[in-house]
Amino acid sequence: MNRNSKKRPSMTSGGAQGRLAYFTGRALTNIRQNIFVNVVTVGTITLALLIVSLFMLLFVNLENAAENWSEKVQVTIYFDKELTPQEQTDIKNRITVLPATSKVNWVSRDEALKRFKGRLKGQETLLEGIRPEVLPTSFEISLKKANRSSEDIELYVGRLKGIPGIGEIQYGEEWVRRFNTFLTFMRIIGLLVGGFLVLAVVFIVSNTIQLTIYARRDELEIMSLVGATRMFIKIPFLIEGLLQGIAGGVIALLLLLSIHLLFLHNAGNFLTFNPATAGLSFLPSSYIAGLLLAGALLGFVGSLAALRRFINEIAD
Image 1: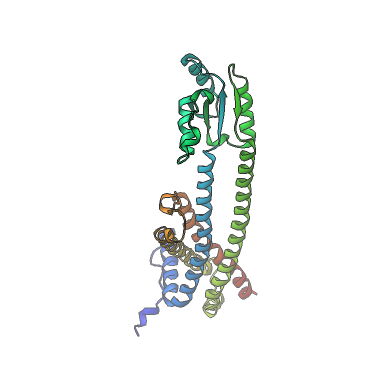
Image 2: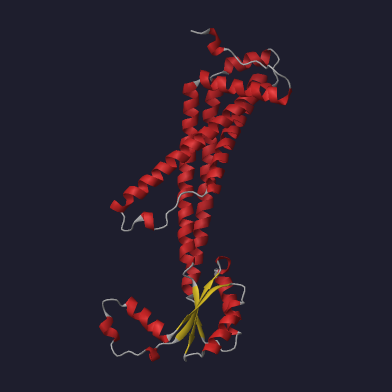
């Protein structure tokens, strides 16, 4: 066996850069000399982050679905008569200037009848003899994303009623209220489950990293006896934990991407819809960066917690 294979790195230059290089070299040497223990640690971090990221992926797609549903929330103004072009323009301009308005669409009687027939596709005979004049004209108003809560819609409708010439207003009050209640419930459940997962992950990783530290208990005790400071002992392990966390985060993301693509490829065999065209998306870039940062912090905090307990023991 080559005698230099287990040689520890030495501090070849002074200053912060030299110390960082030395501590990083020690961390990498520790990883090479304890491959099995480090594989177990990285595997634990990977599994923990994969569970969290799967939940995040589910939550992101539920939020996207909820946002798509919220786009269907609209306010409709019905008129008993056909408005003149000037009346349409005047009322539309008054509606458009309201802060919460996103889009205003005029629906004539002919368009309303066409839509009605479209909804009864295959049963058009039921509408024989019905003339467009029996249907009302209307303005369909889409609201901005930030103004789709029950309270904002009620305030918006109140402002609409103050516009001269406005007819009957409908916006599905009960549906809007139930929809917003559902969104609030999902977000609360998401926060509770997410918080529980984070605490469980920190606990598991901290105890796993503690095993790697106890595997080198004799070495650390010797370093303490010859006068090494606590910080000198800790830094290589903290860097090691940081690297383990980053590695676990990268592997977890690759596994998550594989699961996502595999699901999109095969889900059509057992689902009634095609997930590839249903808007199911992968984690956005901000979530990916957050997951990698969480992995690094997880390894760092897990090492710090395990070291604090162990250093206190050998100091006593």
